[in-house]
Image (cartoon, rainbow, N blue to C red; front, side, top):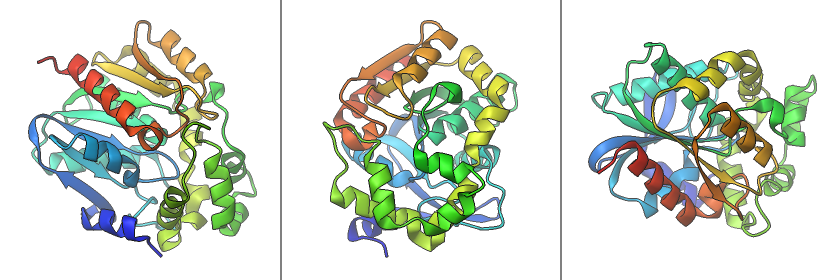
Length: 293
């Protein structure tokens, strides 16, 4: 059952048919400039962006739940790929006239972003990228520290573990990726579980986590995009993240020499939830670098 807070979020968007599937889409008209395209992480949804959207009400924004997540359809027969999610992002942008977009991506969403960047680099993208802000994503998987739950979902026990996942177990695992300075609140935990379990989403988690295997399979393509994409790229990083650790941030700095990086010393894996005011400032900084006034 959805909480009242999540119900209000659902009322702010619509369900749209995208590439033959039903996706939850939140659109907001705003000031001139690039559309902010928000790409969420695993196992959450576009609900993660609500506070950042409230703090920065002026820009035009587009946020959606990836297939298999949040309020979107969660088919059991689908082969979940980041290429499909990137296709969906392109389609949603084209529906509003293909304006320039600025990517704001977290966790799994950073790999959707790097796929869009790779397409742009190769002349395969049908939309214009104005810049990108990527944060706390295990883009260099060999340097990251996946959670126990992620490791189990990727194992042969994945289907069983997904079916047996309970709200109590989820809260325990999820709370560990938040920093001690910004702990997971009971209300946030209830909201996140409501979205994950909606329409049986927890039971397909062993399928939706396929993106981690893709990070291994497409290492050259996506690492190359981070290194060589000519657009404006800014990183922001919660330094208390136990998953996308500072080792990942150091590796990204080495991969893309001179990349702008904004450090958030007291934040964990979810800065947009833990300290949205700091993330809003990071977004402002990244936008100014990408689109000077």
